[in-house]
Each structure stands twice: as structure tokens, then as C-alpha cells.
Length: 209
Image 1 (spheres, rainbow, N blue to C red):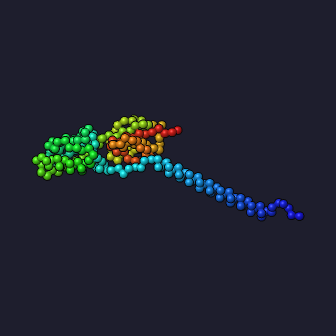
Image 2 (image 1 turned 180 degrees about the horizontal axis):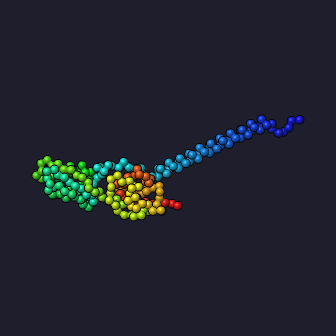
Image 3 (image 1 turned 180 degrees about the vertical axis):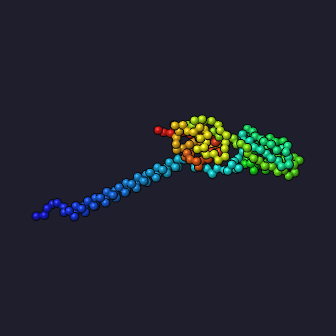
């Protein structure tokens, strides 16, 4: 009479089959978990605003508060330091009030040359150098919120450092920026690749504990 028990070879085969099935189930679960994690990471990245292709310092458009030096070659009396007024104009001898706001330094040079040509200057040569741009602002979870002079090459990390560093409540992953000329705050990753431009408002949010 045959016994109802399985032989050792059969038991070994059964155990191997169960082990392979368990490994396959584990692999499927791991793949699903990885896919979910990638989706969450992608969703998090999409929640940040795209870093714009910001202009070089020489391409930044002039606005009220910027201080410039205007050099008119061969005309020392016209050469000097000026500030863009609240209306966006610069007042110069002979040329009068010339609009500077919204123009890059090279564009403003051409505008001044055109203005001087209307006077006794036949072929004026003008250069415009930005001495100081309008300030930027840092608010929120920093040690010293306030207004600060703009520096070329500024990014969000250096801006926060200038404001005394982040507080212990500050987010360590994101920052909010209101770009000059806009009215809304956009979320950006807290990264040295995110630049700060003249007139920007940087707000460091509180992190969720």
C-alpha cells in the first residue's frame, strides 16, 4: 500500500516552486513601489516653477532706482552719474528727460545718442554703465528680513545668506519668488541654480514638521 506522504524529491520540488513564486511576487511588488515613487517624485518636480532663462547682467533692463554712469565721449560736461527716477526717466543736460525703464544699457545708449543728435552734437558716442541695480528683498523665515543691494550672480542660497541665514523653522527644500514686474509668488526648489534678479522678492516659507 502506497503512503500518502510526498517523497523527498517531490517535497524539494514543491519548496523550490513556492520559493520562485514568492520571489516573483516580491519583484512585482518592488516594481510597483518603484513606479509609485517615481510618479511621486515627478509630481513633486512638476509642482515647482521652471527656472527661466534669465538674462546676463549686461542684458538686465533698467528700472526705477537703478544708478548708471553715462559717458559722452569728448563731452565731459555731459558725462556723469545719474539715477532712473520713479517715472523711469533719466534727466541729462541738453538731452532732457529720456526714458530708460524697460531698456537694456545698450538700448539706452542708442536712445541717448538719438536725443543728443537733436542738439548740437552731430555724431555722439555714448556708453552706459550700471553702477548699482535696484535692491532685492528677502522675507519669511530668515534671520534678518529686509531690503538688500543687488549683486551680480546672486542666487537664492546667497540671498538667504545675505539675510542672515534661514531660521530653524525654514523649509529646506523650496523657496517662493515674486519676480520683478509680476504680482504672484512662484515656488522654486532651494537650489543654487535658481537666480535672483534686481527687484525680486524672495520669501522663505516655513517647513512642515
